[in-house]
Image 1: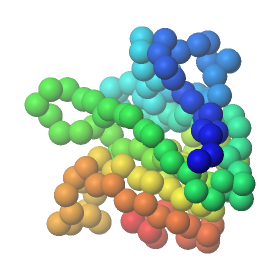
Image 2 (image 1 turned 180 degrees about the vertical axis):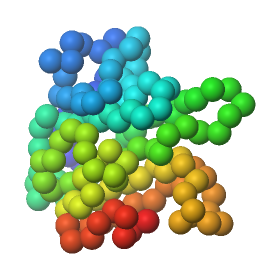
Image 3 (image 1 turned 180 degrees about the horizontal axis):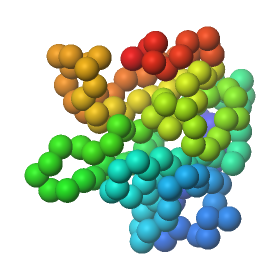
Image 4 (image 1 turned 90 degrees about the vertical axis):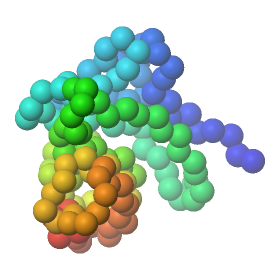
Length: 144
C-alpha cells in the first residue's frame, strides 16, 4: 500500500493561510474550525485550490476523503448553486467560469454538488451529485 500523498487542509484550528497547502480565492475565508467557500449571502463566489500539482501519471489510483457541510437558514431549502470538486489537468486556479466556480471547459474530472433546482434537471432529486470527465472540448453548459 502506498502512503498518503499529503494534500491536507486540516485539522482545525487552521494555520495562517499562507502556511497551508491550499489557497483561498474570492469570498472564501477561515472562520473558527472551518474553511468557508462563501458566507450565507447572495452573489458570492469562492474557491479553495491546492498550491501543489497532483500528478495523475504517478498516482493512477487515489482516494479522497472529503467532509463538507452545506448550510442555510433553518427550515429552508439549500441556498446557492452548489460547489464542485475538481481534478483537472490545467492549473486554472481561483474563481472563474460558470461551472460551479471552476472553468467552463476543463481537462480532467469535475464532481458537481448541484443544490439549485435548474429547469434542466426535471425529475431528478436535489441536491444532485454528478461527475463528468471532460477532454477540454465540451463546455459546462452543454454537459448539464
